Image (cartoon, rainbow, N blue to C red; front, top):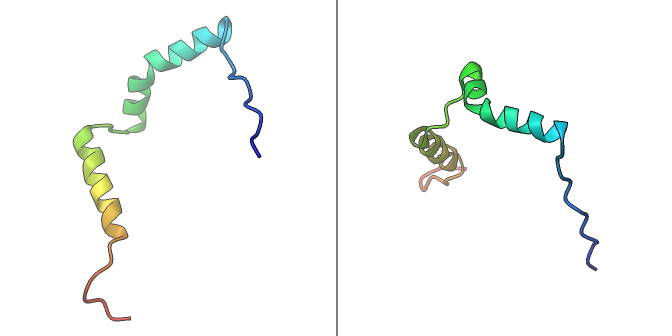
Amino acid sequence: MATIIQPTPALVGKEAKEFWKKIENYETYLKEKGISLSRKKIEKDAAFFKSLFKKEKNRDR
């Protein structure tokens, strides 16, 4: 049974201005928190994460 699709909330006025200020300062925010979003680092972390779920062929259980 399908559910009713709810309308998407829209930002207007003061809320919209505050949102765009957050978007403009996002890179500064990430630097302050020490978060790096370089593609190389993300790919490296993704490869490590995938390796956690790989089964080892010679693993004794």
